[in-house]
Image (cartoon, rainbow, N blue to C red; front, side, top):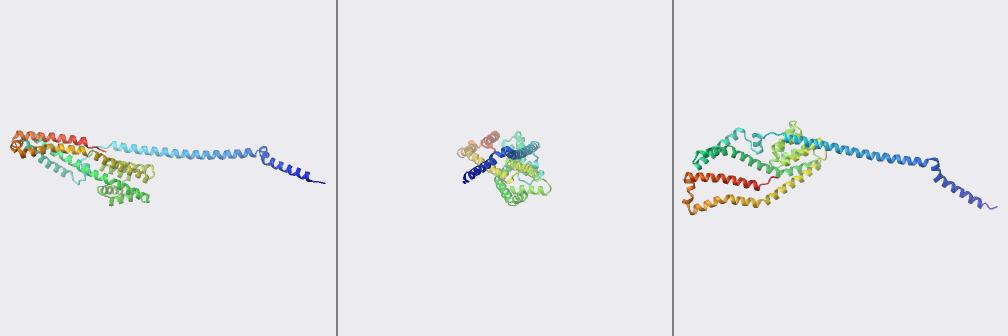
Length: 330
């Protein structure tokens, strides 16, 4: 008897049963629906977790923005509430270690010199009071302003290098206070002395942000204000200090390059102003060499001295006007 048909039929039934077990039975028993539900729950959980993490990051960013905004508002309020600069602060900003009495003595000597010159040149008591005012108030104030401007220029030139020292120190793992001590000991003047005062202020218990704000009061330039804002925001809101100072260093160097370009472009106007200002003196000297009797009337007669004194005054106003026209503040 041939059993081949029975074997083939049995194998066929086994194959059909396997196919049924694999593809049809899960749908009938609900296993496929359970697997789909588990996959859906897992996907929803992952999506909820991602949404929650995104929400947390957004909340952190919003919180940080609020902290930065509040810090900037506080700094603006402090800057807007500043009172008039005292005489002691002006003397310190000029880099002088004078007492007020010494400044007043200098003003009195200057007033005597300018008043005497005005009286001798004009041969009239009418010009004595203006000479005393210019010598006692104008010239000392101009001297402080000139010394302050020269000192601030030196500070601005050396300040980007000091910021780079802080950046390299922070990236190397040094604390910010140690970086400031390095600047206070090795930087060029007047950066070295100013940061030494910052270190001394923090040693006396002052917060670093407040000490840097005091630095801006002593050195009232935009670059130091930027530095103060970065330090205060980092202290209150946190963040990558080296990255923030790196951006600040690039801004400072770009401002320096722009100032140098402006200075180079204005050299022609400055040379023209110098020629115009010196021309009357050269013409007067040339006339005196050719016709001394004609020119010497300006200082041997009272009328000539008054005319010459008035010409000096108008020359001064003209030079100051040209100076304002060709100087650009960055």
